[in-house]
Length: 494
Image (cartoon, rainbow, N blue to C red; front, side, top):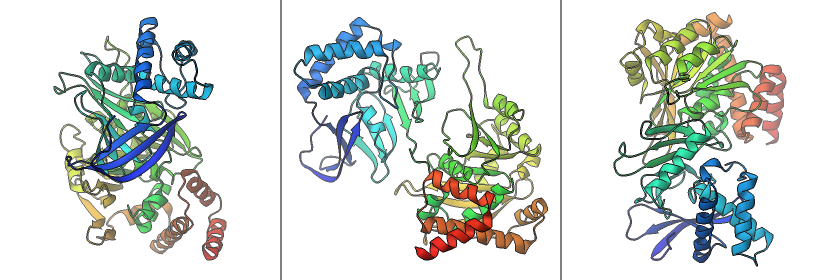
């Protein structure tokens, strides 16, 4: 852990992690081109750390730590491990009170069964990504306000990194070893974990943790943050309400999954949702009727594997009203997804591409290679992007798929004005909506205006929490007129 000498402190804040007081400083050092993220723990001196390291060595001699794990949500561990650790703490720190012993125990659990100091990073809601690149490099983090930062945390050895990653994998039935040197897993708190070991990454073993917001993104937050406009959000709501399909497209960390989560708020609460993912990333609101499903890798003998195609085929037997598909990567995934749409199911998925043109090209080329005739099953493509210089996320394009590999861009992002603006008139969507609903063009237009008003009113009234947004959506489907009347009164009072 480093000091803050010859450095300018840009921001400072405190967290409490399982009774342990943690202080965070964002600093600019004169000799570094990257800002630093310094973690310090109140009440635990370097001398105390050394004693705790001795206790950890004693624990390793007395029991196999691989047989135990710490619950990331509560910080609790197996009672036998807890008792042994507390006995040693009482022996080494006989004059400490019960509260201080509990703090030392929490710290010891993180070091012995968790991910050490990295555990404190998991509880900082300003962080989006935590990366360990080797024992020679400092742990780095991606901060919502400051971008990439170097921390004052190091993993002591390559073996410690490997053991930590292997422990995470075992907790979810995944293996990390010489035969399986790549790991995709997740923590019990929902964070996605990717790990690699040498020689796949020659510089050292790596762990990448992608954190997810404890309070999921909602469509009203997207509007308030200018990710998209209420006009576009109203259109997406209309499309989802009337059971048309959407593909959310974007590059790495562009917010595809967050967008899919936000769009799920528009699904009527009395409809059954089946989600299918390789790694658990979606976290839908509690009011939705949702059944999450996950793929499984085969065991060491090559048996027991469940892939996305298996789950997609199975989901069609579960009487779903809507199907959410985690990122589509392979031919079979895409083919089954499009077949599901053609059998009359509403499907919403994510796909890796930077714009509408690239999405069409990738979908119709190897390795995905979807037949061109199937593409029109997708009604809309919503393209998300992240400005890597600023960290800002925006909707780049909203396009309808017309025929074959053709698309028509309805909205496009104007970078100078930082707003999503209309591009071209619809060639297909309006007609499809009219056919599906029996509504005239004017009725659909009036319907859009009502939805836009509701969304604007929610933003104006600062209704951003996922459960509160869900309550408004449920009220809309129960009694639209009453909801609009209530919002108009609230709007006036505000």
